[in-house]
Length: 275
Image (cartoon, rainbow, N blue to C red; front, side, top):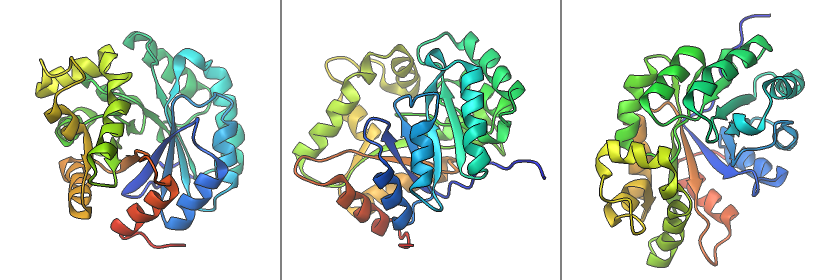
């Protein structure tokens, strides 16, 4: 058997929280031609939810975005990984993040996973700041930054290094109504603008003084893209041009609209082929 390769994510995938991810979601995204589903919000370390998504789809790569190391003993996570890749060797990407633990806890955790036969090619780090992204590039397949802008992607490409995977998340609203955008803004304000790690990186990117009182309009329009097809496609392409290999698109649910219908619209916008 040859050396493992990083699963093929394609240019665009979907990010969805573990609380809202179901096997039927995976089946639909697979049918629509998306290459990857990122299951976020700290899925359980037994990876049963990930396995169910793999069972329900034929081609889809399932990535965790991310399992938090504060709630997942590394030996348990490594055993779950080996169980799942025993059935689906090329369709699991294991994303991990600190979950509020100090940065110093990350490298020893990665080392334990590697020692437990999780290959670095199947491992990525949910990282925002330069040190964490540099570590991701040095010790794993790459980085999965969450709640970032194309400018962060441009800088992150330099931090993670040439040849490492860079897969940022991007929030998208498929609509032009102000009420639709307002719902997406709330998903950023609570809780992310209170997280020290998010605040520090946004200040670093030039938003100091714009993070309180719910965040400035400039900040929100830079973090969330909404509008017509060209606007949305243009923002996603900005990440690719800035150095991303893959963009994990988080479609924000709009009041009165079925999220599955928005996935169909997005697939058409991106020119994906129904399988």
